[in-house]
Amino acid sequence: MTETQGLLTKDEWRAVVQQCQVEPGRKVDLDADFNPALMPKHFDKISSQQAHEPVLAEMTELQDRFYAANSNAMLIVFQATDAAGKDGTIKHVMSGLNPEGVEVHSFKAPSVEERAHDFLWRHQLVLPELGRIAIFNRSHYENVLVTQVHPELIWPPADRIKDLDALWKRRYHAINEWERHLVDSGTQIVKIFLNLSKDVQRKRFIERIDEPEKNWKFSPADLHEREFWDAYRKSFSAMVSNTSTKWAPWYIVPADHKWVTRLITSAIVLHTLEQIDPQYPKVDEQTLKDLQVARTHLEAE
Image (tube, helix red, strand yellow):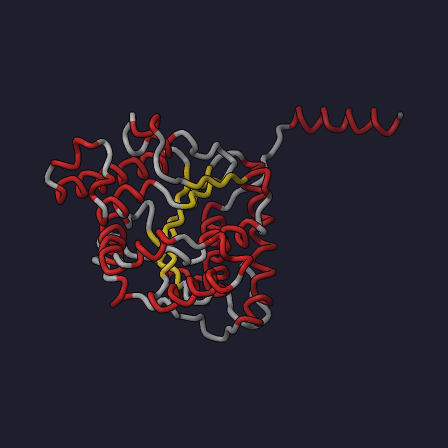
């Protein structure tokens, strides 16, 4: 990552990313440990736009090499409270990526077919191929988040009558081992939780009600779910504590300021691509000779 016009050096960028990363085994209390209104030093909304351009440019170059190398895949997981800005963040991150190599999957309530399988099945179906990036807008983690707050939504139904504490431990274990298998098989996993404060969520809900072009974003169900704020925070904290692993750590990204969310998320994705360090494929000597023959033929036309 290059220096961004004196705002942050490469080492300072890495420090921002590391500040958001949850160390494996750490017991997390979102409210006590992470500030949703945090802003990187030296930045404001205007200067962040200036800094974002070279970040996106480097992402574009690295993704091109990633796609060409065709030796790894990447899965970016987004989880967040309502109105935390997942859609907008995904849109801005993708602006630095070639759409040909990216797919976004949004997971709503499971279908009848999906309920006939285990909770990881529908996510396994849409994992990225080598050379490609998949983005999960909500993910397999819904099965240890929403279901903790609303146990009546647990599927299969037989799991509802079991020891729920044991069930969550079993699911955390299943998720960790599934993700370990994916990483061992060449899929780099980036897990991002957008950390929004309750007051800013209230303000964004009001905006959605007051601004006609945003009315479609608001549902009475959002207000109903807000009543479970404390339960969700407890569920999110448990999720991060139990599933931030060495092979697939969580990043807690402050979400009270959208420009901060987008800038840090882009930096995390760029940092991950840098760690992979993809290279364009090298061709053998015979292929090089064939290329020169083809060039000579084309020049002679």
